[in-house]
Image 1 (tube, rainbow, N blue to C red):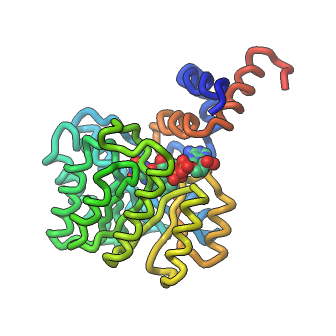
Image 2 (cartoon, rainbow, N blue to C red):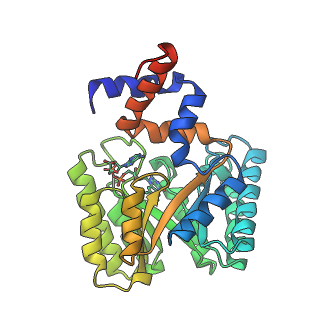
Length: 303
Ligand code: FDA
């Protein structure tokens, strides 16, 4: 990353919310469920599937966790009512994972049961490494209780991932495989891009070898090419590719037009600001655009 870009990334949190909102609007469906419905319907028109994320991290109490769960029930209602080709992605910290495991377990079980009643799949997102064990445990409990409309995420950045894939093999899990977005200590995580990629392909091979349905979530063309080579011997319904809303949209359309199931991660909600900052911090080109937009506010007439 360019030095100037790094500086901009550091000052992002002090950039006016209106600027952040404008620049990041492509990454967020909007603040309301109706916004998400419209975006998903448009994606479906293009042949893309969706997975809906209600933005609500850093939940600190029971009432907030219950409110997040209610929002997911409303999303399931909307998917069913509008016949959307979509499922949901749930962060367990938003359901209380870090302060009340039993509460989290019961809210998740209710969401998964509601999903099953409406034939909608529930993906449990994976968060920082402090959550991995509990997340995997809750996933296993649901599967052992007979739920099969639920899946998990593995992160190739973590050194434990191959072992986790092995440990889950008896469940033939439905797995979203990604690099992992959280910064983790070097003792437990690969740091170089090469190691993260290598670990990704090892986990992918292990999961496919075990008969898992794998959703490969990456925008990394190098990984995408190697993934597609592996998928070429499989039927299109037996795997999927996933990307984030607003990232590499043309590539996603190309994947659809060449017959690959392609699902877009659609975040919506009141907490759009925090999600936007994360997306912008990962994208130096947009950080540069922010600098331009800010300069224009300070010095009108600059271009
Ligand atoms: P990489 O970061 O190398 O990106 C490749 C290229 O894609 C970049 O050079 C850039 O051009 C473009 N790009 C990538 N991200 C961009 C962005 N935000 N804005 C603009 N351009 C961008 N992580 C996690 O820890 N737990 C989870 O549950 C999930 N879930 C998830 C679902 C889906 C559908 C996706 C696509 C990703 C996740 N992730 C995730 C995030 C994932 O772990 C990873 O951090 C990001 O996808 C970035 O890594 P890539 O593999 O895309 O490669």
